[in-house]
Amino acid sequence: MEQIFAVAALWLGLAVVSAVVAYHLRVSIALVEICVGVISAAVAGYIGKTEELGSNLEWLRIKLFDLPSQF
Image (tube, rainbow, N blue to C red):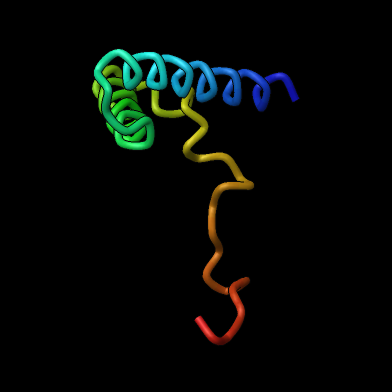
């Protein structure tokens, strides 16, 4: 349970930082959030800490056989 809160705190912290940067640069917050997310994923991949971002958690993985037949 602690890991879930740590991952959520990390992403919410990144969202706050990107909102502050977007406000000072006077650009769209969503655009800066996407850029910050991509940069943080690239940095985590470079140093080998992609698990810290929570990108491979069980509840995030999509199982193709669980999707409805219309997809």
